[in-house]
Image (tube, one colour):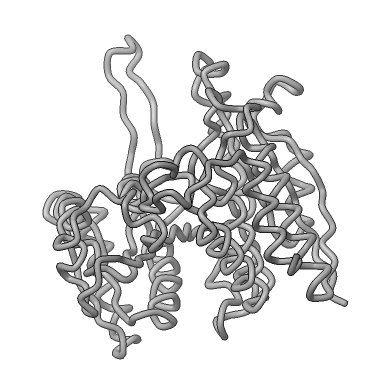
Length: 379
């Protein structure tokens, strides 16, 4: 029997609701496959500010470092919007990422057949660039997570009328995230696109120089380059052309949110922030990771049993895959999510647009989570 420790940061807004169901799914996986998951619940974000006066208490980071992985719900909300930048809930995310050494953010975006009608693109657009001629897409954005504009020098002039944020990257930072991207591409369709703004930014020119050197080590993977503005257009014009996109912190943040809209709902998208390539499908050894849905805290619907828990559950699947190397278990969770959708169940954010017709049933957060559990448990 395998034992693993997982730090839990439910966070703010809908975070506690969706994390609770993700934990239920993990426990069901443990019971079925003979694993024991030990949880350590921690505070960060708005809740931590209310209790301690700071978004990331030192005790939280220390405890998280002693665990094998971290599952996070969401942080933030209008309650804390007027706080100075260094005390905002979002600073907890930056602190956890840097403190745990996770530097590669993996954000998959795929169009599930059950949610085809929720995608705003026409069939002919989806088919364009798709090598199999299908009206769908399946891409992965690998975002550098601990460098760039979000961690560079920043400040304001003495009179407050001028502000600046600095984009800084080292060769080593670029190399390591590119290797994560190539590792992922090698397990997928063997295509990798580096996205930058090398026609304007010196930091992007370094990205392109380094990537051309690293590409030589992966001759079996097709490497291409796009400026970020062109990439943003191509995601709308023909998302099927992409397999793996590797890019900087800022560009990855923006592009992954754009890609999420194409899937039908941001409530469906999981993410993994890794300190390496992870233990998926024969890749490198399992690594520390932070796993979280990308939908945010959504305080306007918190506590109403209407949030979509599937992104958090799929984040738990990524945790099983990348931090624990439990591929079979991760696939089982993903299959259970698909089965729940196949049955016609929909939370409000994906209801009425999925093409399920009269078989569609709108359910709440709890019922959707229980439907996934029933599949896993074979009920």
